[in-house]
Image (tube, rainbow, N blue to C red; front, side, top):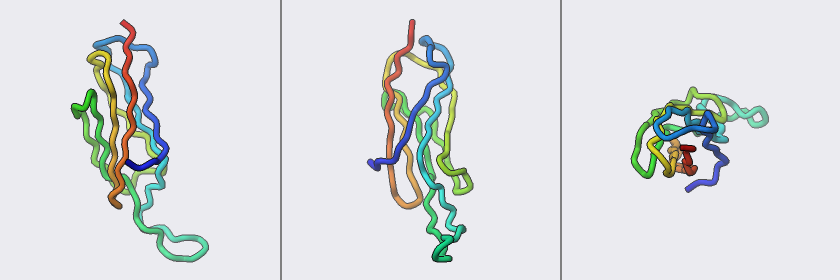
Length: 111
């Protein structure tokens, strides 16, 4: 998997089994549309953007987002999720250039 910097945040920080939380996936990505010119060369910068983001809990998918090139640089994707208990939260992404990546975070409800 690719080595882009990414982060998964769960809010609120303290939550219990059965509560609904917001899960945010942040990734350092240029999200180039293919329509912007390089200031020095004047040539178009090739398109490079995320096309899909999937959220999993214990390897079972619970949300898939289809993404277009118009999303801002270094995007943040947030979904709501009802915490079923302890487990592993995983987010994967794909780009139009074939790059794939993932980030994993342990879910540890209090109570």
